[in-house]
Image (cartoon, rainbow, N blue to C red; front, top):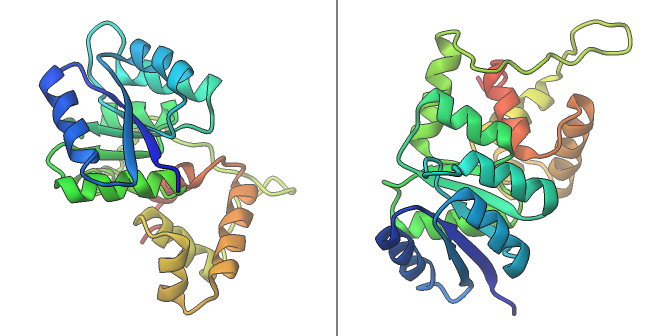
Length: 222
């Protein structure tokens, strides 16, 4: 069984080395390269073709947003998991709008970082508890850095959602994968997979990360 190839981007050498040691405790993970800023992460991604990039956000010269955008543009299949110390609205929105597949804070336990890398590799959007609470607090107070346009139906009316669609959106926003959602709603996993695909098509979104962000920003996760 092939290992999940990971590239780590962080401007602090001891953190890069520390994260490498943490990840390689798991036999399923292999750190193929280290980078000190977003540009180097992009350049090394083209060479090493990682499955997942673990990306800091605030780095000198070329930050995480630069790296995320550049990698996603040329290597769209590479998953990018942000691991940073910042959970302010501007940084979170910048990461997600750049195309990040997940967002964690560095206070996360080692075991959860490993699990999150595997989850993102498997196509599951991952948000740390602190990040999710921050997004929720901003939504409840009416804040929104970059509002997402509300999709309209064929008649130009604001799109509505069935009770089942709202249930699925809520659980996606909370970070549940298809199997977990199926268990919560007493559905077949294939049914949930189809429901998520239909929601992506309906909302003209690309992935679960955008679906989760949409749900939170429009109060569909309550």
